[in-house]
Length: 232
Length: 385
View (cartoon, rainbow over the protein chains, first blue to last red):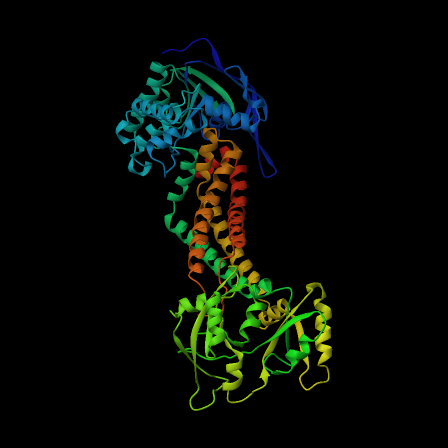
């Protein structure tokens, strides 16, 4: 493990409130969290506890109603829409439960998508895609469309897309939630390897204690607050 | 892959829907091509009319004849350079479908009246020598594969010839070309003296006069002077500029411009709805994908450009192809077999067509693109998952 003492993500006093009709729903209530660079954090908790919302805030996909979110020294909650989008492109790799691959693009082209936003030549993009494909063990599936891949392979493509830009932070929302145990283990092995061998900082939301056990730290959330902290 | 590649990849989603929508745009642009050519064909007589040429016809209707003696009297008026008689012959060449205008005229006067008809001097001389001589426009000569020296029989429908039968036979002595693209080169012209002497009845009567005046700015005075000359006579006249005459001829079939504009508007609104619906459907189906793009770092404006670009690409390719095909089809010439002698795709309407295609792409894509731009990333991701 390559965890350092440098705080990569600092969440302070974060509140998130949604309006459901006339009713205000408090999803996060004054939450504080520090994440060290190189950490693999698992966020657990029942549905509606706010773990995905917290993940979205750390990834700049959403903004807190109150409080601050700082990543690598930058207050992302203060960025404008355009700047936040570009920040995501540079610093965040996202892994989704249902892979969210574009069905009309091949595996390689899906992986190349985030690179279209970077100032890279075609050959540089090609080289980075090849590296990412190799890392997830799918060199031979580069030209396949998502529908021609198994669930596990699609998730590997999703992971390759998340790491192809060499992001500061990888955020995974139930990455094994749609996979059987064996295939899910393969995905978790890969994520663990990214964390341990490549020093990637990962936050993973999961319901599954087995998946969470692969993390270096587990946090439980209840009613929009962190309840317990466990070392994995 | 490039961003354009990403944009084009969207077309692989629903190929049948894409083909149907693109086809509707393509057909609309072919229809546009024909409609503007038809509109132009009707306007052309008005556009190419000489400003110094006036038409003198019977006040009641164009089919009422005027006395041949009017020619001299008109020419005596101040400011009138010449007046020359023209009549509608209306015969048939082989089949009633073979329609083209035939006019008995005085060769020298008529050619002087219409300097845009270019006839080689030796052919003009031959026409003056040959009583039964006829001169035709290049388009008609090409259409019926006529060449100089051919004898052309026409079956009379109005003016039967003296003697037995109703066939007039003419010797083709000349083929004229139009000076401009818009010049009518579908006329069949033959000698007025032959017409007067050889017809069974109506000698001394002519259809109308073409009249040339010295100063086009005094056309109104000339109109008044001619009509005043024959007022209270058995054959009162109605004089008007050639442009007004052509316009009133076109107006007999209704306001072609307004009809064409109405049809085009209906076609474009329909196509706009079809293309707009396609784009809206495409965005609805891809909400989650658009959310993914935003999550990966695509800005709102880039997502807007992607959807709008898709709409533009579809309409530009289909519309451009439609315009091109329409241009080629219209270039084949008058589809009516002679009723629209001047039939071509006006270059200015090609530009108008391109602008309309562009606007169609923008209008069809605008609302879906704005909707895509406004999507909240987390909502879009949630909606799909």
